[in-house]
Length: 291
Image (cartoon, rainbow, N blue to C red):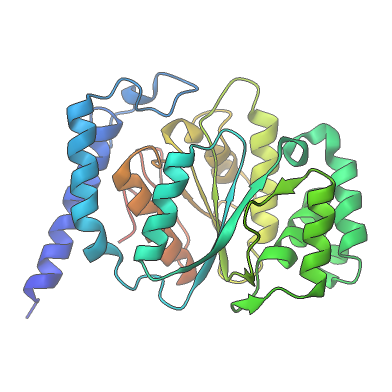
C-alpha cells in the first residue's frame, strides 16, 4: 500500500513543477516568458505569483529533498553574472538534502575568456604536472578542467592535500578563480551555477561546457544550472546540452525560481545516482524535474 507520506510527496512534486511553470511565465510548455533575453526570465513576473511560488517551494522542499544527497559532498562553483540570491538558495537546498557543501568557488572572467586559454592551460599544466588525468587530456580545456577537478573534487570526500593546494594557489594567483572561504575538503560532485544568456557570451558558454565536461569524470560528476535564458542561444546550459557531454553532465534551466532551485538539487541527486539528465523548461529533454 502506498503510504500517505509517499502520496503527499508525489502530489507536491507535481505541484512543484506547476509552480515552476507559473513563475517562469505561462507554464512549462510555454516559452514566451523567455522572450526577454539577457534577463533571468522573472523580470516581468507578477510579484504575488513569485511570492506564492517561493512559499510553496519552501513548504515542500523538505519532503522532496530529505536525505537525497546524504553521504555526498558538493563544491558550488559560480561564474561572473550568476545571481548570488540563486546561489544562496541552491546552497541551502543542498544542505537540506543532506549534502556537505565544501565551499563556494568563483571561476573568473579571465579563466572563461578564450583569449586567455593558453595562459590558463599553462597554469594547469605547471601546477598539476604530476596528475595523470591532466597530462592525458586531449585538449586545453580538458587539461584545465582536469586540474580544477583535482583541486576541488574526488571520488570520496577527502581532505585537501598538497597537490590540491598547489593547484588552487596557482589558479588564484593567476586570477583564474577566487574563493572567500576555501573548501577544506574535496567534494564528490560539483554544481556549477551560471548566469543568464547575454549578448556576446556564447564563447564563454562554450568554455563553461568544456570545463564541466572535463570535471565530470571525477567523483559523481557535475550539474550545470542557470536561469531560463541560459538554455537559449548563447547560454551556458544550452552549450552543455548541444555539446559532447550532453548525456553525461546534468543540466537545469530554472534557477530563477525557488522551485527551480529545488529541482537543481534533485538533479544533483540524479547525477549522483548515475542518472544524468536535462530538466526545467520545455527546452529540457527530461521534463520539469527528475522522476
